Length: 294
Length: 294
Image (cartoon, rainbow over all chains, first blue to last red; front, side, top):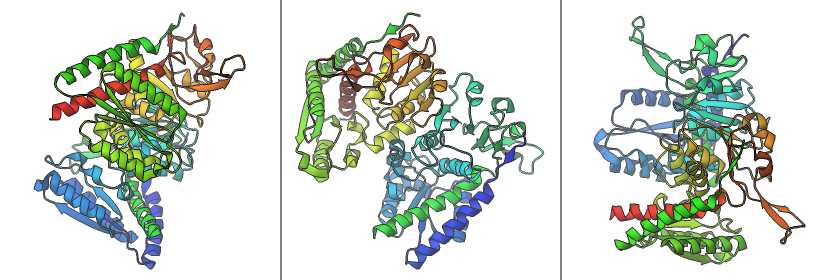
């Protein structure tokens, strides 16, 4: 079987284009969509990610306001900054960069109101997702759903096996896929490090999502012929031959699933390439909802 | 295979006894554990349930304070009552009886703080559960886990198939079973009305939990020989031969699983008989946590 390699960048480009149109329509009504990106401390990866959000936002007509706090701001400083953004009518979406430095209680993000919580970081937003209510789902989980939709993979009625139970990917994705309606209604199995006989479960999947953060842990013989494989993993592995001394691989042994899977997403360049576009789309949705309220 | 019929009442009695000991210990330190039961309007089923909580609480040394509001209290009235209970240092647990009358926004329960949310009703509490944080899980989901533990059924590493994705049972139960550690770490599949070929999934279960609210929908031939079957369903079906004109059945065709399942819970008298005891245990835990804080 020839495997269709599903790349994220073209899908992301389509989303960004749509976001740009919607942002322009809002601008015509005097509303400038704005995403606040809160960075506490100076994690280099966060800085790179913030810059890429700024760049992408600029290209789509979304104002990206990066709010930098010193690592010493503490829980109180972070909470004050979030409260100000929560109350600011000109800010439509808020995302807090992870990881937070020690000294900042991770539960500060719970203060982000659901209407602005464009990455579903707060406990209340996650609870609304679990309840099946309308809420912004986490961007990475949405990226998986978006990739499947772009490849016209049916989700409704499919048996989706998610390997990984993290609070940011595995569990929210399971909740998202279980929702009623369009792009939901899947039968979902969640596997993890405690799963006995993992291959038995993965071989049953119509759609297999790898999100456990273990380099190339899903081997070719764990994938059913004709299955759809979505790789959420981003792992650095040492590689003396690479310029930087490492290369980035997913949770799936990609070469081994080629020729077995019907569809497979690569790493890098797969679903990871979609998350920023989806963050911007959630932001423009938040701005539209806010504009409707006025 | 002889099926062990697992009844809830003896397990509940053990829990209530333990709660009584812990409540007495707290009382010795001047803390009277107190559960507030909020009833809005006069749903007859709620009234019966409240009375049974009062009775059980009385037997275990838990003060049960029933707060009755008229159906016309509206969202604001309910919110005010909940805010008062949330701020009352003498109240350790709060439960809001369902269903709420029309005119009361169901999201009022989101105002119950996690520390007092002894049935995990608020979105924030459910989100904490989804995140894998320490929080009171919903009593019905806990009743399933408690029944399995009482029968010494291993949960860790088991494949648990939950049929039903409701916000009060199916989804929280899946989240609870996925947590790391003791009584968690299961591999979990969630099936529902949108599942294709339900029997294929149910036949794979080590532990099958029926929670879809359809009378006797799980037939004998959908259960693997030697599986453990937990029935959460409570359905009234017409029965002209019964005194009240109906009888109560579960989601499992109980007679058909006898002789196939290793363990099965009956309806009535199975996990349903455990929920009030667990509500009281969550309340005494909340009171203990509060006493430690002082």
